[in-house]
Image (cartoon, rainbow, N blue to C red; front, top):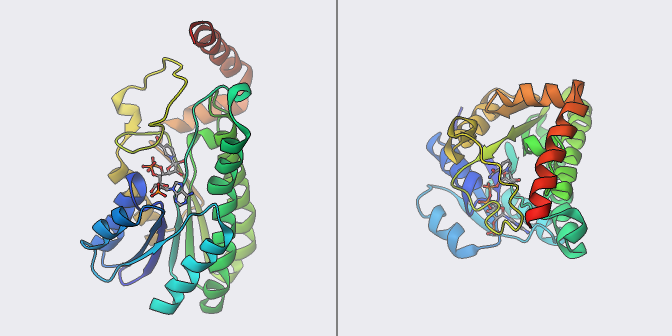
Length: 259
Ligand SMILES: NC(=O)c1ccc[n+]([C@@H]2O[C@H](COP(=O)([O-])OP(=O)(O)OC[C@H]3O[C@@H](n4cnc5c(N)ncnc54)[C@H](OP(=O)(O)O)[C@@H]3O)[C@@H](O)[C@H]2O)c1
């Protein structure tokens, strides 16, 4: 399908940038939003019929503006990709209240408010797809990412509930949960390293995630985990949580004594 109007948040780097490019390649009109206007404009120059709306998603009035400007420019919204987000790697007891609140605002409150803002236009046309970029950390509580995990668990719960409300109105809500994605700016300010490295075959590229997002827009599914092998880890965490507790506690104890 092509010619859709697609809002991509966090389009200035990583998964968001790759997603904006992938939708544009498919012939869609992309609205790129994030805080860094220079990056957005640079990317938009390569994407025909795209629109840049700069916004700090921690500020509700700027969230409303993204939707208003999209509707003013194109008159419709077909797809919303809630991708913007960040995580602070730190021991929870050492993390600042300010960072904790900001993660909740950007990763959880912003996608909720954006969903609320796009729904009236989607419901009026009885069509639309909302794709929320969550994380495997939203299915498995992850040490050093406690608040990040909380935001992504929250996003999963919100998506499931609102999906059941709007599906009868012709609107799809999908959750995509990547594991480790290489080559993005995520975790650049990593402060605590648990010494865990993931094998290359467990890591995916932003382009691979972007392809999956476009596929979800074409054929909506309630949830996807990428790569699929992470379903095994999620199942283990659900049915044998004490095993995961024990192995993670060992890793944490070692990292705590050396940091
Ligand atoms: N990388 C991974 O391993 C991984 C794994 C699972 C899930 N994810 C999820 O994937 C999504 C994208 O992450 P990424 O890996 O592509 O990281 P990234 O390269 O750091 O991209 C994050 C994007 O979010 C935007 N953003 C951050 N704070 C914002 C704010 N206050 N207002 C507006 N935009 C904001 C950034 O743009 P500006 O700085 O220009 O505002 C940037 O475009 C996130 O939701 C992340 O949780 C990532």
